[in-house]
Length: 263
Figure 1 (cartoon, rainbow, N blue to C red):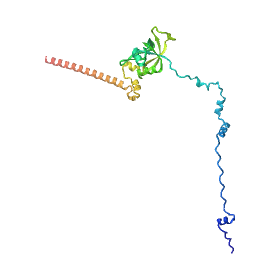
Figure 2 (cartoon, helix red, strand yellow):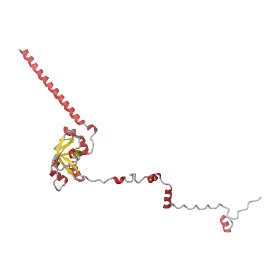
Figure 3 (cartoon, one colour):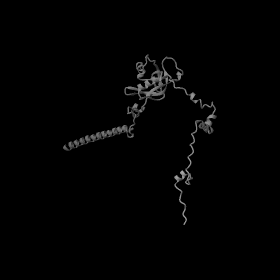
Figure 4 (spheres, rainbow, N blue to C red):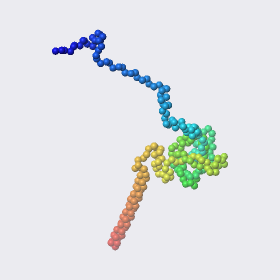
């Protein structure tokens, strides 16, 4: 019986003896990584594929107004404005103190139309009126935004500025277009004018000054409840008076019957 020849030795012995090995060869090393693209290459690739939006912007004419719109905007500048006063600010000393002026303010006699005056406690309040209504007072030219801020601070947020036409009634220097009234501003009452004139609680002004809103059930309900209670009290009083009248009439009839029966 024939047997296969025995191996001549281990792989290590074959390597030492110079005999080639018959095992699998090792895998080759991986190729080196590609270096990252430089900025020049990135710029070239970007220019090769331009954006359609950039092409449209490049085709736009320089005089189409797109690039020059920003230059048309003018910076804000304070311009003097006439204010119409009708209450405590008609006093030169009060106005000088409020605005912090060094000299006496120049007030001009004037009037406005379309407004009317009413009382808000101890103060006068201007509210919208009929077109023919007239309010007389004084006008003052406010010189800066700082003076406008001081006026608003003095009047509090219970008053808001409103446009008006001021008609001067003195012999001062004439303004341009004075025959049609000079455009100006007036500080009018910011709440509900009807509630103010009727002496009712002004919910609108209260909510605005307090920064909160009353519950929906309270809106207008308080005045209706008061009116309803007043009607009920009147009805009770009327019924009581009628009952008293019937009681007196019954007592008189009883006395008369007793007197007749005794005779």
